[in-house]
Image 1 (cartoon, rainbow, N blue to C red):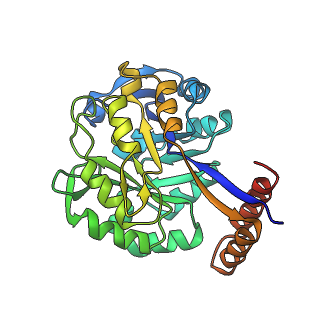
Image 2: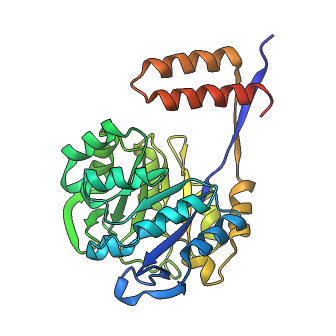
Length: 298
């Protein structure tokens, strides 16, 4: 008789490392001119996040994003090598060359923003070449208009249409943050996040920050059309002492939910259908290993 298989799902905790001029910094208002230095050794800071319980790292190269200066790329590669969790990298990724460069450094995923909005033909092509590897970061104004180029330009495009277009273009996921919001004072834009999880099947990550554990609890319970947020990015909140990484991780773990049950035959059938779709062979192999792991007891 086939055994029944279950798996546990919870929001993943991403820790943010902003890098400016070789240092880890905090941007209290999103402007590099107001950057506050936190650590002269970003590698050490990244290791600290992981040791405290972060599931993923979200690295932003501010020199590349703001000035087109890619001097931090070697340092970011050192971080990727130094930690044993997946690392996604954003900041100044505005060309096919930079996408390939960041992936070649060992990044789990590349995060892009402006490029996805201003050149959707290239965006589609990049996703064809690198399926499931490109995440889109969307900066959303209070009226849900999308801003680009470090919040300096409005696009005339809005969250709903943008999500639908980029989802059809092959995005691996979406990061949603809010333009001009002080994350330590103002609440997340829950309506924007609800819209995102309702509209797309890809993972949606709340990347604008939270004020406290109560905001985390609200995000954990946010559900639309049976979909939930896939992740939460923290950084300045922990630095400011609002809560610890361990407390945030515990909040997410407490709300984890179980999916299933499925029989092994049902999962094998789903995997066969997955293999027939246009997927990367490496991803299909990973899916096989995962199902075998579940069948062995997890």
